[in-house]
Image 1 (cartoon, rainbow, N blue to C red):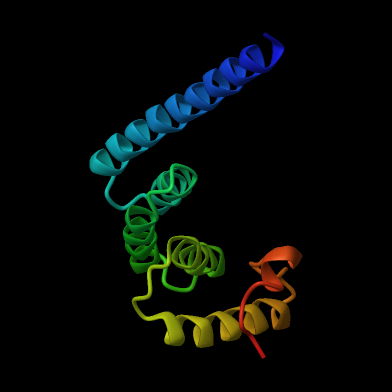
Image 2 (image 1 turned 60 degrees about the horizontal axis):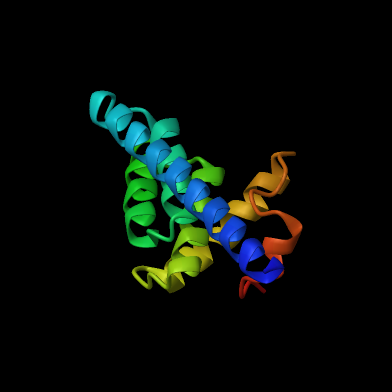
Length: 126
């Protein structure tokens, strides 16, 4: 019947998307092992991990990327977002305080906010 066919197609697309993300994450982790100082590879791997709902892994990768580039507003913003999505509560309050400073500093320097408008409405910032 039509409903069952739709269900099968939906499940197939879901499986294909999972497979693509899983393959991408594996390749990016290989790249990170080969180039441990590559912050962009860590950020890309973390993004794939978030999409696969591996939030704790994403947070760990973003913390490593942030250690390489401590003043990178985008990496810090991604870290906070991964923490929120995955309910990873380590350094929760201090990260929100720092997020406010990062956003205000970015704007003061003429850079766009590292948070998109929709994301900005979700965080408990004053």
